[in-house]
Length: 278
Image (tube, rainbow, N blue to C red; front, side, top):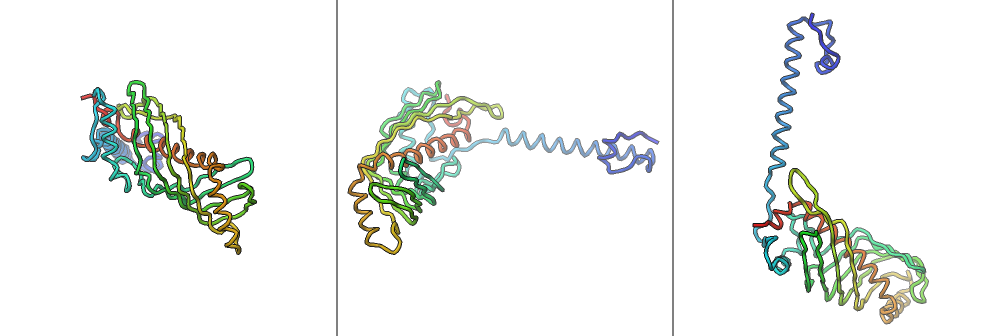
């Protein structure tokens, strides 16, 4: 009778004393053969995954790290991509810009709590990239972007006081943000995956200035459409008084969107693929 360890017995789902030496030898060899096959398959699979070529769409201009005009090359690349941004670029994990979907955002002031859900932003691809500097060696990207207009729609829930109005309601809303100026600085560090170097943006400094906005809040006072119309009119007439609050809404949404978008791109493609040296 051959000796079979408990581990080998479990692998065979057999009890050692019931089988002959010939069967035990065959069973152990069979298990070992299966393990060899499984390991070979796994090794081949991971080899394929690690060596799989990452493809950037052919319409994306590739800029070189050592290009003395690197910043201008990246600006040209981004401007040329604007027609594609509305529908997104799945290969680069860039989500659609028009509409840009934000499930939920909120802000709280001393007198008001506001929650906005099922948000859609239109015209996000209509930006003007005024300035860009990418210090690749220091993993720092700086940009100045402006929007003439962004349109936000969705559902609101307001509790508290807005100007002189005590509000406690919910409904559909629309906000037109006008003359938005954004200054942003992203910084990160190099990480390694499967022997490749990636740039992982981890921090963002984000400043935003909003020129003005106009909004429409439906059903502010259920059963009293006249008061709803009057309240919307007064709120819009005093929009400059509410500007800091709506700047905060814009700032939270656009900063999160900027950081998450660039992180997805740079964590998907190795740095020498996005910005080769030669």
